[in-house]
Image 1 (tube, rainbow, N blue to C red):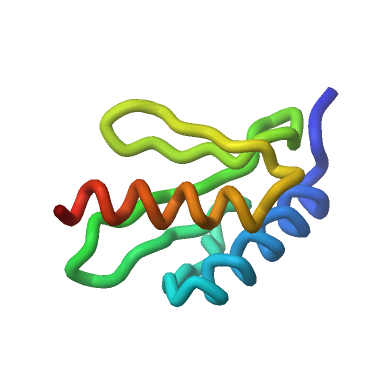
Image 2: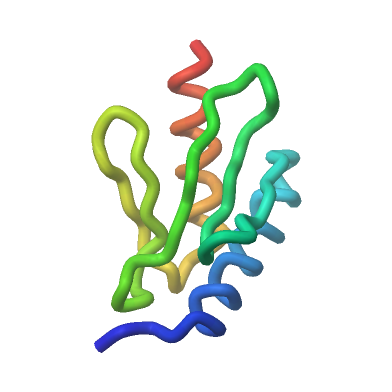
Length: 87
């Protein structure tokens, strides 16, 4: 089963709110349902929703994903990934 565009956007907006709560800047993509996270000097992560709508997905050196049902925990995991890559 595939999640529709509006469901993916709803999930990304929830994640965007949680990222903002943690002080992480994020920007919604105009081209596709995705978020760009990180500052100008930081590595940027592109986060999307899996085709089935069950996971937030991002990739740095390897792939990573987190259940979309928990945007607050996903935001914490993303913050940890960004910190790990900035030293």
